[in-house]
Length: 68
Image (tube, rainbow, N blue to C red):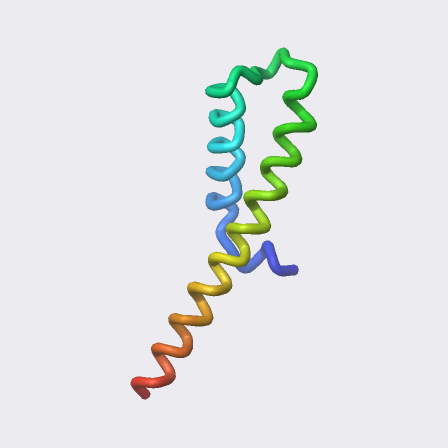
């Protein structure tokens, strides 16, 4: 699966950032929307993170093969 290629610490850190962002915007763990907002924001950010990581890997591999 795609996620297994990336260290879990990246996704753990992403979850921490999402939780802190929600709390900074007034949605703490006692708020009724906390769980749905956490899951939705995490899912969206994870999608962008995957695309960004893949794009970086593609650029790096093209760069590496051009100098061989």
